[in-house]
Length: 113
Image (cartoon, rainbow, N blue to C red):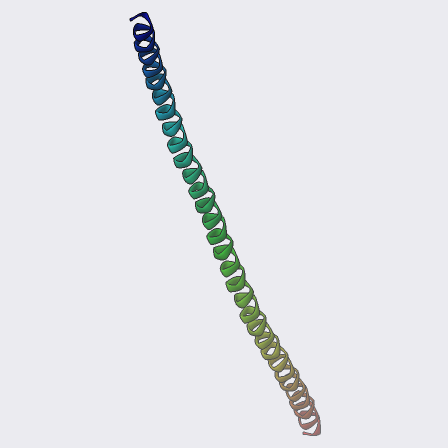
């Protein structure tokens, strides 16, 4: 009978150890689940940060391209204005020459009278 009682005690002790081990296994599984969730959240955060950085870079590239296009348009407009100024300056010079010639003719005509 003593052997049977020892076996029963041994069985109960093993059963308690099994329960303790099961609790530890459950805790480890919970840790694994939480760790997996954390890793996934961290990866998502890194992905979102990358996407945000990339979109900001795209926005800046688009703005830079737009400014470059505006600079080209302004350069063309500036060249047109410069050409217009040259043309008007030449026309002014011609008109001043004509005026000077007309004044010289008038002076000659007045002196002939």
